[in-house]
Image (cartoon, rainbow, N blue to C red; front, side, top):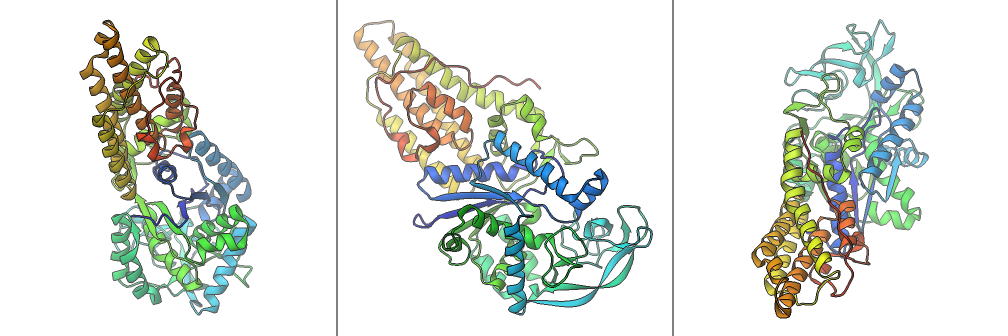
Length: 538
């Protein structure tokens, strides 16, 4: 999607649910979003990047009960954990909040009141699962049973192991209490519903214009074309945002969680007239990065809520494919999981950032294995990129000490410009693998250019040959400079090391794409190179 250059851009990442530690499956959303924001800024856009912890809902209550602590303590523990992981991975949010903040409670209550005043919320009696053994009504995720649509095992609010369809209270077949395993009864309970069914025509029109990835649009359109059911937006919990006028009900977590995008923008900007240009005045471009498992919520529930309350609508939804481990679905109990903290104890964070976008197209499933990780590291980062930088900078440092004199050849400038156009197109198409492949293609071109020209023979001959040797070296250093700028969004720490080895005094993180064709300055002192990457043994 081409974005207007004259409008600010708000990029969000889906809020991580803070009832447990971060694994690499989570990072399939956050790393590409960070790469996208960094590249937008290199392209000259005014972009801000926000996210935060999703802190409400039944799983956090379950986790608190299991650990014998309060929901607040669970939230604080894992909120800080995710913040540390993001910092270690250089996922650089402009603001990272949490949905239990005072401002998110206030903004959620105001939006729900606006939906009520606009006639989009009504109350009705509904059947709620009740456990006679535990003596209480069971919120969604305290319940498991059979999906009425496909027959798979499902939880109370979603067929998470089968068709993926959202389930309303009372729909699940043969419900059982997840706490004690007893059969659950359905009892009448008053709840509040959002008139989602009245937004079908709006959603069809909206989805036709929505930018982002096709998987998000097509999946959402498929559901909208079917019968849209009204959406129960209250739950019998104490932990959460209170439903206006009711002390016994909180709003469903999928109401207050996306509203966090708005409240976090408020918390970041503070001035009302400034945050409103993003969320009520249509003066900005809004891009959501999510996983495919929450397309339904972001492309159907969320825009309908915003429309009903009179807020601005998202311009694009970018949905990543899910992550598996050696072909298996993530499972903590079976050990099919790779924890982010443990990974980062062994490997540089930039190698994980690279792998997450290089291994597969953004919308496709990513199957992690240690074999594929080591192959990417050894065959690409070590053999192509690491080899180019260390070989050329070492040769230049040893024989010249500075960037030699010479002009950048048309062949080199043409190749750099060609790759630049490929990278911009990849960003506009949310194809981060293509971004990486193009930049690594330029590094491969640099290796080939250096090998073809054989400067190590020229340096041993006369003055004229030494001058030609210097020209060759400068051209390849120009290629390295360009690769460095192009790959900084993907590997910010490692490219900062390369930038320093080239003797650049500017900041690679703020370097614009236009700078990749600006000739590297002759005479600037090179630094003694160090190896960028080490081989990985499985």
